[in-house]
Amino acid sequence: MSLRRDFIKIPLAVAAAAALGLTGMPSIAQPLQLLNVSYDPTRELYVEFNQAFAKYWKGKTGQDITVKQSHGGSGKQARSIIDGLDADVATLALAGDTDALVKHGGWLAADWQKRLPHNASPYTSTIVLVVRQGNPKGIKDWDDLVKPGVSVITPNPKTSGGARWNYLAAWEFGKRKFGSDAKAKEFVAKLFANVPVLDTGARGSTITFAQRNQGDVLVAWENEAYLLEKEFGTKFDVVAPSLSILAEPAVAVVDRNVDRKGTRAVAEEYLKYLYTEEGQDIIGKNFYRPAVSQKAQAKYAKQFPKINLFTIDQAFGGWARADKEHFADGGSFDQIYTRK
Image (cartoon, rainbow, N blue to C red; front, side):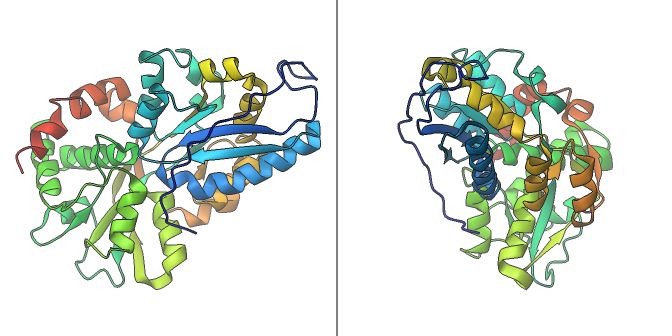
């Protein structure tokens, strides 16, 4: 696994317009390109998935396809699409970032989550804690992150979808333990007082923790934590907190771009392939939780700890409300972080 940050922004080929079997599928075996604009920790997942999909597409149509990838903080990636990054598909960290593409420029239709199973989330994840070998600071749960002398690495909720999941998981833990939103706010403020640096994305925070050797604990996507453990072996341990959030990254075709470029059919097929048995197996292999395949869920169940999970709807009334209250300008994050 490579932890390099590569941001790929290249011109894409326009597909031929004639139909073959599927509306919009090119009629000649002309090479085709798609651009998948995603968030930081999906790099390894989509490298493997793209290879599998290219093989499938070649066998079905006789056409070669290359899927290019762009990665960064989820919120930053959404803004890049709004500013003109030529994405065929957006596979962002949270539905709220995809909804921004609807609100700012109408890049896709408002009903995008109804187009694919499981609210357009082919995989789920959660937030866990990564500590250094032997857990020298004795980190067991969220409340250990606010102790004096504990350095916490987490990305910036203004630019990173993963950071927003981190923030809300900590907030709900504080609310349940201390009994109110006001107490939760105090708890999260103490946690961020222990954060020495805010990277723009989750992979940046992983690099800060693992390669730059900063911090005692990394608040991370579950898949990122296990990829880190896989690469570095015994240098790190994964700690499952008592409570965390069910993260549901969402995928969508970017309507305005695919209709202009003539790539709708292949873009839709690309996302549907995430729900196939092969797609779901690749998802589990890369430490995401398969959302729909019972076979893949059973195969990879042992690698995921059992954690008490809550959803964004249950605890915060959905992403629109959570964004407004916590991450919009003047929201709770601005209130606690500007006091540092």
